Image (tube, helix red, strand yellow):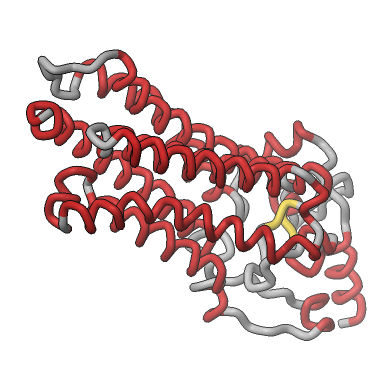
Length: 323
């Protein structure tokens, strides 16, 4: 028994360059348990296994695309959509979208493309971060900043794309809403990328500014309901699609923050149990909260696209003919 425990412990502490045993494949040695990680990699203790330890190699990080681990779904759930979203939108607006005689110019297509580029950039930054986060602590921190920056870009461009169409006949309100989103987006970008604001002292201010940023997206919808009523607002800016978008983002974020569902299947293990017989979690590889959040982001982006297309049709079929 003592010999067996010693063998298991040696296997768990082995580095990727260590020789394999007869019962251990090279692929299995790439993956590690939560308790084997360095402290900076330990984020969600409800996910017990499937980790890629610090590599200090971009090649090894990219090589992780070729095998299954607990970040694989996070990577591909955004990498695949980011690879096709821009080109799909470009094809749609040129060959599928209904043309109107009262076409206002190339800026209409550019408005669609700003959303497509923002969604592409956001999801690409996300997938890149999840692919390279095992490189080192420094790369992980910088990648996390770019991940948040991508989210800010998506929020800003998503809001502006709808406002530009929906409030075309109210230029003052349109410009105010666009200016607000650009202002708060710029502030949140500085708070995200400048290390000076990453300290605990600035946490309340960061939280307050991100809340204001989120509320700036509610203002145009609230103003629409006040001015036109719910049904007309729905026709004008795809209100119901925007509600679905918000539900997707918020529910995904709440599940991620609460670590659901992996927290409900987690079993605590003492140190000696981790050394002798570490257990994997049910949702380690598939179905954990961060993966659900990623899927909800993609679905919410699709809902926003539907709202944007509806806003475009209302602009040409109702707003412009009545000007």
